[in-house]
Image 1 (cartoon, one colour):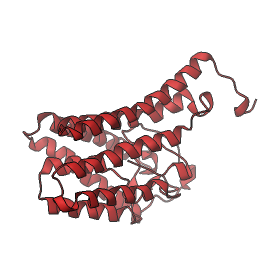
Image 2 (tube, one colour; image 1 turned 120 degrees about the vertical axis):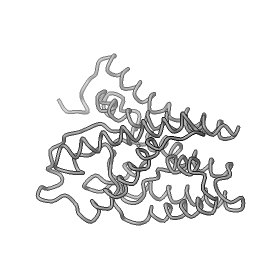
Image 3 (spheres, helix red, strand yellow; image 1 turned 180 degrees about the vertical axis):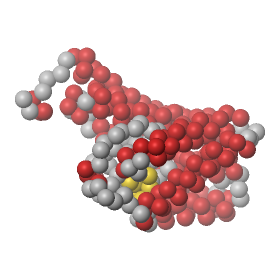
Image 4 (tube, one colour; image 1 turned 90 degrees about the vertical axis):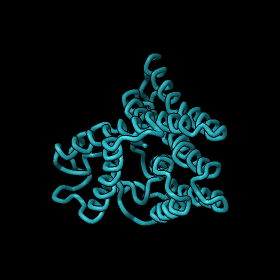
Length: 274
């Protein structure tokens, strides 16, 4: 029996539709984020952004488990995910830049416009995800960028410079680590697990920094910022020193779940930022 002829139980179909609903709930958190930003509740807005990231981190695993592609075939899960991602990773943080004082007053709308336009390119380029499972160009982690700009409280001009630099990096073909495909980061399973644990520590440390804000903690800052620096350095390294010795498509698929956007294919795999 071919895949398109397969039948699924009512429970399996219900599970698949619930997974799509779980993904779609990210749109609700996008609305909550916009509302919190509009009312100047910036800390609450970051919690909603974090919730959206958490949903984006789990729904891919759930979708594969429920086989949503076949059991709920009327919904294009990849397209749904891209729509939700653009709202949460791009539009919400861009709106934050417009209404907050992170950027100079006369550049806020311009800076946010550059963010959404550069990200529109990033989301729609056919090769945004490389054959060896990396993101090509800065993968629109604007919600995370806005958090760090808010936390560091630097001058608006410095913030604007950072935003413009990252927007330019969208077009620079640096390969950024795909957090849910660490089997393509290294052949060494220990390296894969080290990156996995580091990502978990980053998430916990960043959430803790948000919890204690405006107070701070050097260890939490070191963990959060240290991971971001490590992520950038590893990405640059893998750009110039790709894995060799084994055909990339023949690598053993030891999948480790890590917070980040799920794998998608070709044109619909363009984000992400996961």
